[in-house]
Image (cartoon, rainbow, N blue to C red; front, side, top):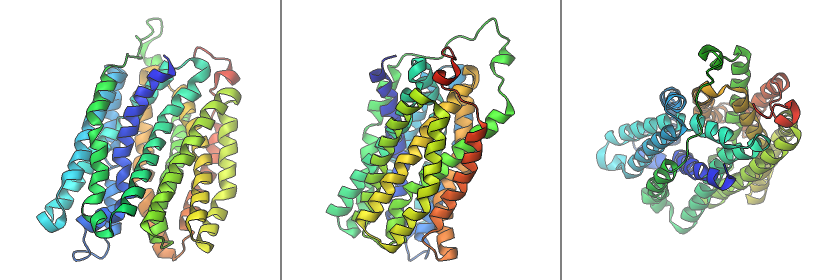
Length: 415
């Protein structure tokens, strides 16, 4: 399938992740709206916890929608997840504040976040399976890069919108309705995304009649363990760095306009890393790219946070964010391709969706809250660096043990 057609999957992917992740960038403003200081002194903590709750339904969405992707096809699964995400983001944007409807407001917010989590849980498996199956063997790294690249373009879009709103609106207006505008912009693209996904061809092929069905669904337990470890590392790194907007405001005491600039740099760095990873992993293999990236992160994470704490300002934060994000996505994209290539087609959508959902539920939904708690408990602004570093050490072990899957290295062009 031509790469330009594959970007249709990417457009829908970008909209879904924009809808889900925009919440984290407006966590402070959402906390003021739904968890006011008059009711609790921990508005930001409750807001971040509600962000994390959206991850609890990801495994259920992965099983239901991911299984649909393996049974009925990748396309219907992608359309369903996108439609549910549209309902969720519209609900969040239109829910009245605590001041207007009291305790019902945070309850509705929680409900719509659970729906968003269910939808996103079923998104990654079918869409990544589609990209792997649509790609020529020698370009699977680049095609799968569309998955993360469009996610990161969504991060960039959210950052640009947040930066514009925080600079053109007063703090009161941003708290009152500015953050809602960012959500409604995402909701406006939902009908467009549903239409585009519905027009895609199907990539799920018929089962091989010469091979027993049980064999087509079999994969070693060690693969699932290593795949989960890689996704955990990817999740902690990605969500740890996406916390930079809140970190810049809460720990470094920088203005909201400067903080949202960090989100822009996060998106730019991620996209550069995605493209570089796709191209390099197709040329030299997945493992060399993963190992190089993760070792560079181990070397750079702590010095980057030290620089930000000693020289807090836009230049330091933007430079640290962009560099770390480039290496984070250099690793993440190569890891996702490796996992997708390793899984049999008959279970690719369900297995990948479930593994991804478990990793993001346990560590994506909790990473930002854990960082906040660690920072408060230790009174150290280096807490994010130590948490991310711990994950990276685990990642080095996983990269070392998992097998190479790139056709250029394995010679398995028909895999």
